[in-house]
Length: 115
Image (cartoon, rainbow, N blue to C red; front, side):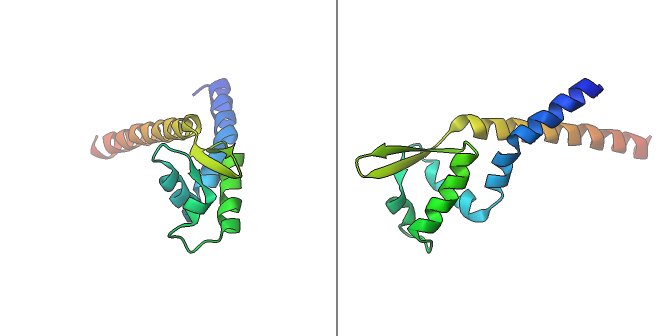
């Protein structure tokens, strides 16, 4: 990899680091899963069946919003939250790239060991 390409890859990872940081928490992953149904959901509904308070869920939603993963829309007296597809697609693309790099490295190692 050329130095310019390497620097570009590093910048892209830094730009997307908040997404992975936000997804690195079990509670936030559960919220993402609950929001993955496609429709927007209120905090009251997200609280149902959870041991978390509205304040805790709000805090986690704020982290997800700051990372661009979730967007809240005001409807009447409440906010409805939904997932934003693009940041999740970006994260998946980055993980796919890393997976391909590992596949190449493992293939080279296998060739070295067996060759």
